[in-house]
Length: 143
Image (tube, rainbow, N blue to C red):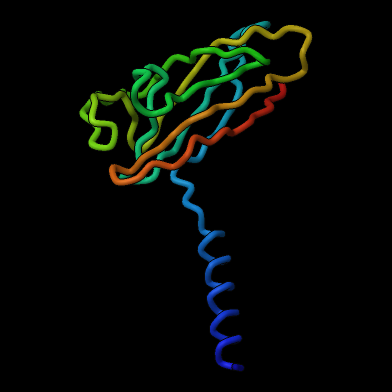
């Protein structure tokens, strides 16, 4: 009986440990660069782990969830500064647009009466064998 309890507790601890090791193949960095007195450039940079991809904002509707941005309560498109790769995706069985290693997105924002730019990015990532559910990362940048 003692051994059964010990095995059961070991399995539970191992399960919690594995759950805590959730993969995080895409990390984000957000910043503002002042362009002039009222204009700022919002820069969103994704660092993508090897073998993983991040999908473009302009991926077809039948495929993966495209990357999307919300800025100050509005859906917006940012300029994709990084090289977009367009190729056949084995998981979705269609041609998709994605990024490998890193992706930079930019948009000129005009400073209004707000003290900051608040928003979020929603994205999906896959590694050729599996996809993670879409994730949303918020940001709040002071002018």
